[in-house]
Length: 271
Ligand SMILES: O=C(CO)COP(=O)(O)O
Image 1 (tube, rainbow, N blue to C red):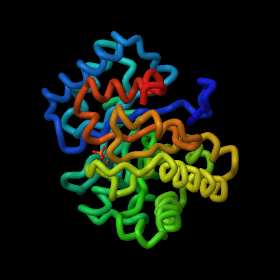
Image 2 (image 1 turned 90 degrees about the vertical axis):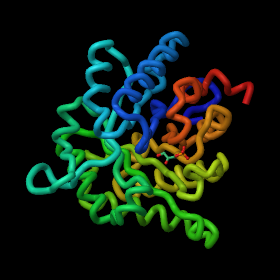
Image 3 (image 1 turned 60 degrees about the vertical axis):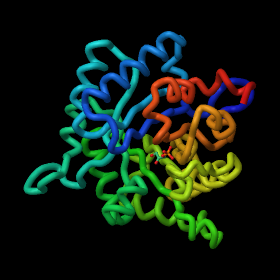
């Protein structure tokens, strides 16, 4: 596993839910409350397996109030941030604002932002830097589309995205980075990369981080897999040595299903 079969992990697993453009601020609070109750009932050990949600911007203030008020051990982050800190950038959200809202994380370069908003690796490197300026941990997303996968150049392609999106990022900063490998062809399609595919790319990402920085940093960075993750397939994915967590889309909108994903260790045997 991230870990091994002896129940210890090399890195603390991170189970992250990307709500995308779903859940208004009222629905978001209900979902988070249900998730927290379900995990509390199950006596989930948050110190062992970390849980984070990525709601829309407009939900974040409510999420902050709820987590602070009820002392919830769930972390949260935004789905994007501006490369700029402040100024005449209509519609943009600064990392400073996210930090003030208690965000721990921010997604950078999700494939939907790369594809629908033309975000380039060069721009994403400036967003990663902005996240660090505001003490947010970037969750840098990389991954290939179907054509690249079919052409067999997916490893090369994904590592090129990684290098480009980390341009100018120091070793000290990279030590706290989270990378999410999300093959575009497996997102929202029900098509899951097999555990071996997830391991191949997560290991390749770690090796590349070792070359870009050093082996110690590479051993600290958490590399997640994302793409049609469900309670029924999560255990096999997380049984891979270099997969340190999952970034879940659709299945994170259902509190019971997401709680079961978080509790992947409890269904290792039955899956
Ligand atoms: O894009 C994803 C998470 O960021 C994955 O989405 P799905 O889990 O819905 O395939």
